[in-house]
Image (cartoon, rainbow, N blue to C red):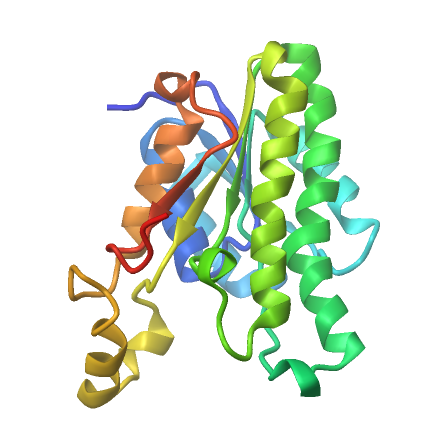
Length: 245
């Protein structure tokens, strides 16, 4: 339905389940994709699956200089970065009164500050071309909070505000900035849960199931498309009704 032929996308955190699903969906829609992460083996495996439209660029986004270098590498590989998907993330869970400064900062560096740095760099080319899509991958906990995840929740809430601010700044350049905010998505970790554990978790989800990574990816493709050109500064919640803002 949504045609991204001729567009080029950079997906961070592409070695994970959601990141990989996003990359696959973008390629199916016709886009070229640069796959980024810290683990080369899964990135190379995904590139082999996706073929010539995919490129690999390793990056440790905890390093301040990595974001600008990554965008430049993606531009060299594809000619441009039309679509930036800020999906890279990490968590270091701990109750607030025991959460160290180091673990607080580490999560904010990767989950929020790196998204700012990547967006800042990618915007230069987008503004010149007068077209662009920046999409942050948030989390339901950025809306409702979660015990033991003050750092992660704060970063994801900050991502929403960051995208809104960018959206306001560049709207006249035909550039949009939005967030896709997943809830409980099926991953290798959730597959290891017992039936009892799954039941307790799913009690909070009205549709009574985990989401699939492709359901997040499809929302990203929509926001990256021309059909979403009048959608900016928004958060698209993909959580099965777990939170209804």
